[in-house]
Image (cartoon, rainbow over all chains, first blue to last red):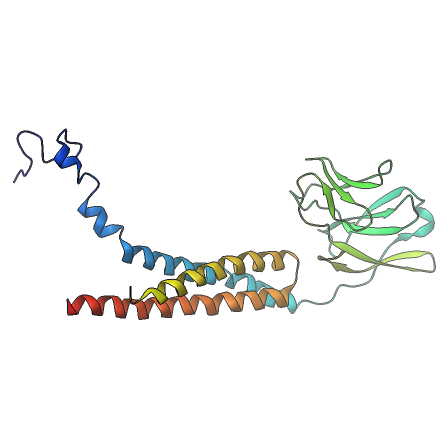
Length: 177
Length: 68
């Protein structure tokens, strides 16, 4: 049965002021988007957020069971003069890293994948910084923290040990400084 | 509103869970696995509280309707 008024008054977007007074009331929407539905959705969102952390904790528990990093020889100290850098892989062959003998004479090593979009970082001797050329991200050579550009997190630090003129990588720290 | 407390509880759990998701991801990227498990645990407990609050709220909400 057609319930619409022949004069077109009892319809949405009517020209009648009296109809437009209740133009914002729509029973379908009222049944679908109401106070109860809102709270149910909010509770669902809360549960979904809580459960979304579960995969991380599962992966974390698997990560905790992994073995400790081993001690790996990188190079001889004599092969790396001040102001020079060397690329190597640590702890696995897939983790590129950079060892820097800074202008000040300090030895530092970081995983060289930029924490922005994983481009390799390079040592800039002139400014004594690490540079990611992809988006001009600069990292402090002393602590691996970003100093300008898009990166927000520090580079993973590789712990070093020098024994009898040989440089060894002994571990890795993600949060440092 | 008699069941206002359930609204407050549910929205508090949302706020907590948003923070926990953020902290869990940050800790995971930082390989701080103990903290990941801690934050994730808090998030799961908070989610359970939200669910229980919803169940109680439903009970109160629809009970009131039946008496009308």
